[in-house]
Image (cartoon, rainbow, N blue to C red; front, side):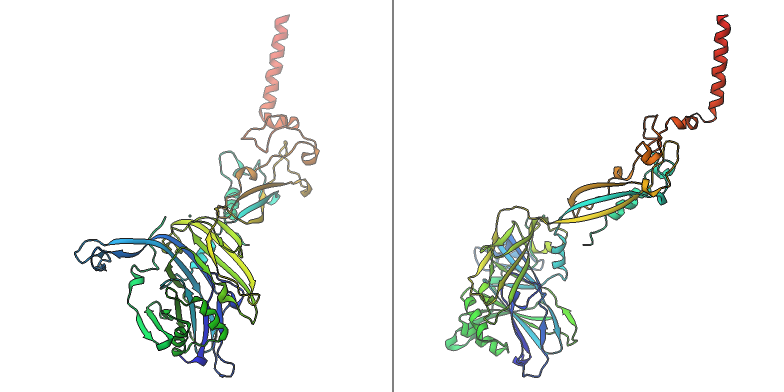
Length: 487
């Protein structure tokens, strides 16, 4: 890979940001006088961090080495089952987006232990975002609407039939808003730390150990361990990585016997269109994520806005209190694209951190567990519903729209619940008095069958109906009979 064709990236911190170039990486573009089109990385690269305890990291035998058989079971040389060794694994997923007119590009990320690298699910960040479950404070306005009918004559409002309007409103309320063990991880192969490496000796500069990882057709990925900074620089120069003085100073903090780097060569289509590359999952053994502030320092300046989703057994925060918690709550990961990390349930934490790149050389910090206290934002929402108007005791319906009323209800729930509007909010009876029914009063107790249609004194004839004259005749005959007997 030629130097003037290479955009050099250092994925520098343990968090990702959606709004600034230096948030998760150091960018070195091709020289301005090269005359060649380079690769520009979109600063909206996202990342996810997962802490997975109790994962199988290797297999041991009393004598000899463990090997996997054809069925994937690990056995010792004598045929007995190998003993699994378990440890906590840390996984960092990044999904770069680029615009390429030609050439190639690269990423280099420091990690504190030997990593394994896989291609991740394309929508895993979306899966994490989908688990954010805020509170909803909802105000429901229920308005009487004559165009929907009348409650005492519309059969949908009888005591024996469910309301079609109820079902419609329930479906509307259930629509999405506009505005939680340890399994086996898919992203770390047992025995990673013991796999063979290629060793290159750079003389006085020291040696470099490396392993080429077959991950994706879109990437050439190498895990690299250098004894010294000079050895790392020699290895990068040999492969055409562009780097400057400030980059070398930053890398110097992360070179050591146990420290590794993940070097990624990207071969994009020279389409000039924005391309979302396949997600990369980098996993290593450890107990806490480093926040590599030292690698973020750049004397040229710039604002670093860092954003991250953290999946872990507990709520997480930065050890130096540099992060702001956007969201923290228990979550279940089974059934989502996150379950491949081997954590069935735990906490989802969303963090944002902002600092100036040239403010000072800040010591590294860590993501670490904090008290499991929920931090859940609230969304205010208004829902409008309509119901048929109720009738007056006489069966009449006011024609004046000013007589129709609006009811206000309030409730609070989690966004994932999306409960329907309660059915009792979708029924009403008119208040007695001139405001609605022109002075009519209710002379008969309201029942379920007569809800919204109770009968008052002026509507007595409506109750008696055709039996009224016959009843009067019986009353007259009864009165005449009593008079004759008295005589």
